[in-house]
Amino acid sequence: MALDVHQFPCLSDNYGFLVRDAASGLAACIDTPDAGAILGELDKLGWKLALILNTHWHPDHAGGNAEIQAATGAQIVGPAEVRRIAPLDREVADGDTVELGDTRFAVFEVGGHTLGHIAYYDAADDIAFVGDTLFTLGCGRMFEGKPDQMWASLQRLAALPDETQVYCAHEYTAANARFALSVDGDPGLKARAEQIFAARERGEPTVPTTIGLEKATNPFLRAPLLAPGLGLSGAPDHEAFAAVRAAKDNFKG
Image (cartoon, rainbow, N blue to C red):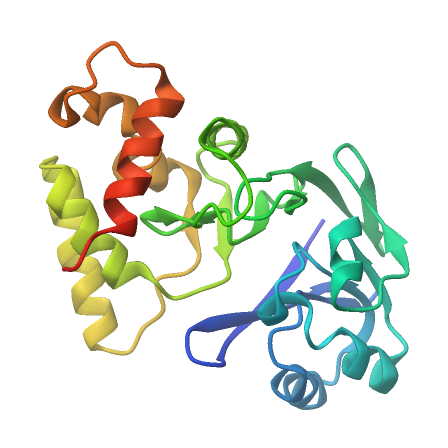
């Protein structure tokens, strides 16, 4: 198996992702943040778009569906909630599989940011497209879900192999790192934050990350270990997570 991934910045802080199954030459885009940018990249690459794979309904993820479909004829696949703002040809949910040539994406339910948020996991290549559920050193805001749901979603992603490449949809990492340093004094986090700040100064992306790196340094995945410092010794894991998420929501650094 071989999945080619082409990543590019768009909008103010989004990443666009085009993927191509090497065996068939068929391509897909993960979400549609910027139709013009996506179509321009497809033209430069010369790739044939077969699928649009939406992770959730927000406009910076599904807002370009109609324009891209009109230009390419691609089939639009995603959770039912996408119909709130955009066309959808095939509804998928947890446990479903989406095929792009020889590449098979397992669909995972990872709700919390939105109730119907999903992720796409290519086990053969150890690649996951997680939308706004998990970020490099961060996680999505809970606009619709509750802490227990979001925590369960993060744990599902954390259960993937450590070497899994994680493609998240935004470049929020420098801000996430500043917050992480305010709640976690782990030396490994400090070293990683220095690398991140230097990379961003050079204009380099911090996406993709890996599951192993996030388990080691992401304060949202490490929330149970941080609970004593938050005055929550013995609290359920999802309550520790909720406290970290609330602290990030109010962080001004």
